Length: 201
Image (cartoon, rainbow, N blue to C red; front, top):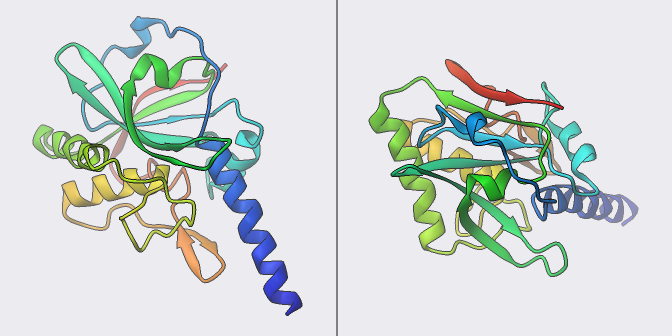
């Protein structure tokens, strides 16, 4: 009974880390010149300003730099980010699509990464991510990578990339109780990936 209770506490606290670090951020305009060269299908990561963001980045296995991730979609001259986010107060949320300026407002540390693949494959990454947005897929507070009826931020990225390349390129690597979850660095420290932008202040 005691070990079960201890496990439930661990689940609760890690869920809080994942949840709050994937929610509300402070805002500030991003210099548009920093956004040049970013394209559809790029993976974008940020270190949030939330209370648990600095703690959550420690759950990456290799590079402890970011706390949240999404997929870039380019529409004409505009850039959007598709990502899974929930309300810090209610825990209710879904996959959303917002301008890259909004996604990066107030963010001091962020990066954009590109998989080495044909443009058609990278475009498919954005298309598959957008499918979850169009379905208003709920945010996954259970962090269950085995079910895509609900998704958390890194799970969304992993699903879109893996579907586009038709392979399990992104794998969950953090052991969490009886399951594995996708850490932040699982979705961008991949074979044959190029760093497009990396901003740290």
